[in-house]
Amino acid sequence: MLPLRRLYPLIAASGMLAGAAMLAAGQLDAPYDRVDLTIGRYAALEHGGYTAIALALFGLAVLPLLAGLRAVRAPVSGWPERLMLGWAGALAGAAVLPGTVVADVLVAAALMCMAGASALMVRRFGEDARWTAAARPLEWLALGAGGGLAALIYVSLPGHQDMVGLVQWALFAVDIAVVQVPLVRLVRMVWLESVSGARTGLENTARGTAHATAVLSRH
Image (cartoon, rainbow, N blue to C red; front, side):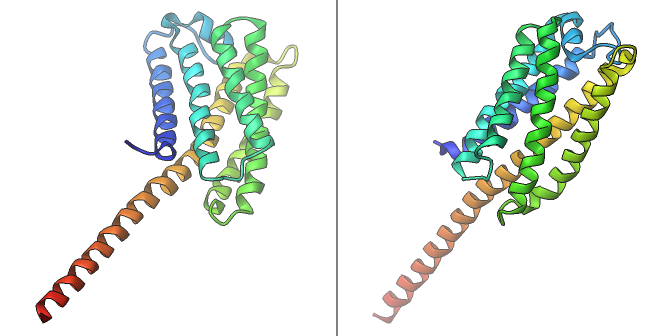
């Protein structure tokens, strides 16, 4: 049985892949244009409920990711973790109540939560030698999230809502990319560590066998 610290990133990655598959399936018979509809409204109008399921899957996938990050003592404790949990909860709530004003508020809250989490993780990861490789891509994504939030505020004003759906989906794509950065780093840390440990064990076994053979040959 695999240790939990190795299962967590696999569960998170599976949830992300399933969410992406649901979004793709929702495009096959989507009769509505995303550009002028918020994510919550589109989820209510799209046939089959694929978008709502995708939102729930993406949100739930963050839970095992955070568990895995805690298992390796990643520098996400405190506000980064809370904001990512807020993103997950808001998406799950929007999936349950699509097409309502509450869903629109929850989606907007989720987008703001991940923008804040990405900005905080840039500093945290940059200060930890194990996670510095993830700091640079997160920095660019945090800048994109900040710019996306500014654009979202503008298109949310009365009379400027023609492109609100496009901005929300673009910002949501940035959020997914933000989640992928620590997930990929976690997979590399956990699985490469296990492979390296197994290789070291085999090398030690081989050395022990060779030494025992040499001792026996002398006798």
